[in-house]
Image 1 (cartoon, one colour):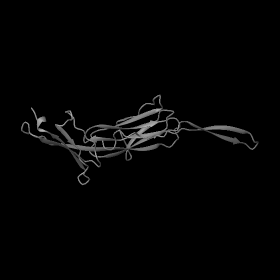
Image 2: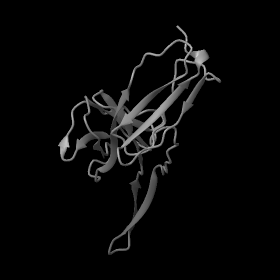
Image 3: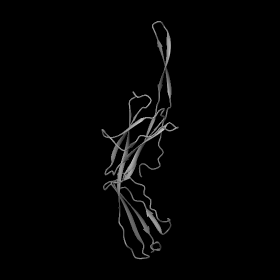
Image 4: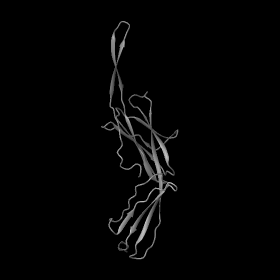
Length: 200
């Protein structure tokens, strides 16, 4: 993926904060009362997915003191196929949404509702699902003849990272990285096979 590869997410987590309130009556009696504020973080795990192939997106909630209720929405519509997740010992909960056969880019919302302080306002975090398609052209070529094969990625909105496999990169195999074409929303990668690599 050009957008969601190995980039390290940033998270700021503030654990349980406790505040004190002093209640003073007309007779000057003082009663301290604790007020707790628990702050959590939500990390959206967006994804690039092959067009028409079922995939999952998720949100990672950290800093929880109790298991949260998680609802996934697309617009105002609540989605099925949700795994709410369990609270781990590290106070982290991961909720997963399975998207069946996506045909276009979609925007989903991960809604987190406090399981400890149920009157707290829910939080909403946007999670993106970006779809793409791959076009390849097979060919026949004469033995010991240098040739080029290609792979075209379509329905994208930015530069993608593409890797060829099935060979050991050396002088006889020369991959070439293409550039994102904003006018066609595509990117073409090529692999040159030198004549010595074109064998039966």
